Length: 437
Image 1 (cartoon, rainbow, N blue to C red):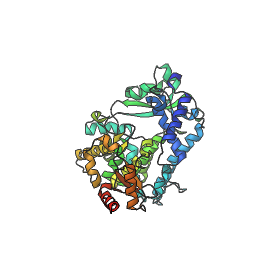
Image 2 (cartoon, rainbow, N blue to C red):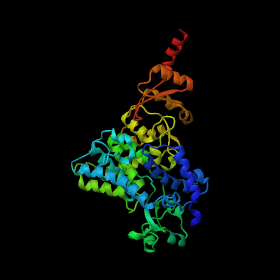
Image 3 (cartoon, rainbow, N blue to C red):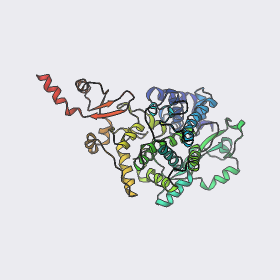
Image 4 (cartoon, one colour):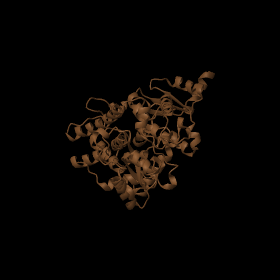
């Protein structure tokens, strides 16, 4: 058991490496909470400092303790982020909705500063929370398989007694990747799955919240779900789906384990009479987000960390790029998720899936990127970008391009939002002609 839990020194090293090399589109304290969870997956997969050594029983609790943090405090902070999203919902249902994605205290949800600037329609955000909260449910995925004649993997997180797990010869790898649908009842009866832990046991070192796969198969892309929701409905629905996905991530390490994104979706359905959605709409989104077995290595599925990770070259996160794409604003073809796949591959995949259900995505692609579609992914990933403010003179921007051999000029406002993209080749001739005069 302990041989399959990452050593504390490797956990600390990997955490330090992440903090030193990445920035997320959120406040530093929330960034820490997300990085802690990312290390769990990295330990399982032997990534980063774990250097191809696979510690498949490592949990977020092991990481928190290795970093010398208080499990209770970390859990409370994560639950607080979920509760602020619930506060937004409660305000809307009480007919006192917020015009922005902020909590009662005015803090932006998930610490994303841009949410304080962006106006939203609460009705559409509720729709997105409903769709996003249900699409990952085991029964929804099972029904989607039947309706669309596809194969989707699915499972659920359970509170596990690791002593029973070891006695049964199981580990985190077997539980997460093998099929266990027919064994769930047995696992509950023998005490592997703890259905209702008493409060005094919640922080027991023997209890871990772990994923058990019910059915083996390819999964869904969270990126595809967010973007497809935006194209099927609008950008505020896409933001609601994103918030539901964030809840699904955060609830993996809190003081009371339960399916909070699913519960919130059901709460909205039961209390908001103007929702205007049915379960068939959830099946539709689950289908569009489902990745076929033949495309598993080609379609990105970003975790919360990767959705918020700020690309070094462009200064923009994957989430911001998705939102720009939905709105038809300029975006750059960055490589996303841990697989570093071109974002254009994802957008083409979504458009094809929408066509397959007779729905068309109406998206405006900036003229500058039409040429990029014929380029190789490797070439696109290595484009050089120059970032300037709207107040920068064109002459100064072009001088930067020549000095740094840049290929694209990105114009960003003080909040980091991309306002436009310029092709320097359209203007450099004038700068050079002036220099000869």
